[in-house]
Image (cartoon, rainbow, N blue to C red; front, side):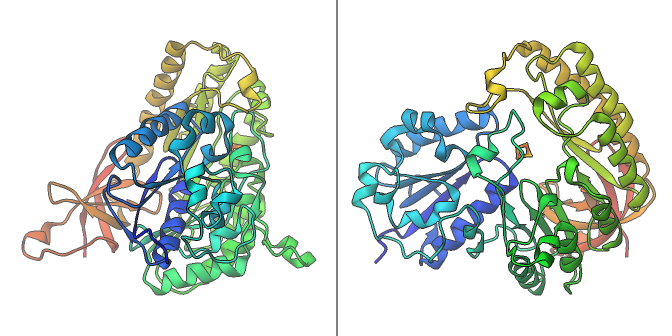
Length: 452
Ligand code: SF4
């Protein structure tokens, strides 16, 4: 009998971590456990960690002692990117009961076989575990407890083979492993039958997907483009998104597929990381700024406008000079991004870049970040102005404090919706598609009215 009745999961970091937490929650629910919203009262607390930035890591160092102080009897599981880092283990020691690399969820049952603490070793056979292979992908077959009733992440694989010099993911999650297409299609069909309106296929590199079966030559040819085509055929009323794409794997065939599949939204998230060729080389990104520019112009030519292009950028990579940074500035001006997630470089232990001198001063990193945000605000506003007076489909997410609804367009733009009828007809629009006429725009948002 499982002595643990309740669980609480704290998730730090990216979409993949959120999705992992949904799988863990689904697994606990199957064991008959229920969610306890107060982490200081739950029997089992799971921390899904992120090691991509120092700030995310620091949150874990804050959480762990606090949880053990306020809830000393809980069984604390640490999973995610930090679960394999020996320095983190040394620092947190016995405060963590089970160190669980995400692919090893079955080790919950056998803590004695893992690097678990002595306390964990005393607690064995408390969970009934599905019979999974010990790899970093089989756990994706766990049934998820989706956190939204209308929008779901569907993981298609885990891990990364690219070894970008600044990134911990290949060490934290292992080599790329992909799910079988038939399992992914089944999960999406199930979601579509349940009325889900937005499905996002996720992996570290969605566009290097290969069918997990790899038995025949045909399986090997079945890539991300084939998967999109098959998922696009599933009946239901839903939008299809995907993230994250690596520029080096964005083939012409895939661009054609994105353009032709009507469910696939007109939004491509394409991390550039920098606009300078020398730095791209040092980052081991395997494309040049010219390749990136050619790619974005191809995307704009082939995909129905307005196409939104968003990106990730790192400023202040070791040795990045002011002149090299200016190449990123130029890239921003040329591509006219709709959104960019800009990070100030911080060295990640164990990565190749961590051996380089982190020699761009903090103040200069801040200045570079601010300079890019300034351009981004301009280009995003320019892009949004094209929406004024147009009627667009919006998936409504939630109601704000002032009574207005909020949602997103296919192009991933935030829209504040004025529903004039709500005083007479207090409708619940959450999870519904509505047609909205855009009347006002800002850099990172728009406002519109529902039209019938
Ligand atoms: S592609 Fe590069 S940045 Fe992305 S997860 Fe892999 S190593 Fe990290």
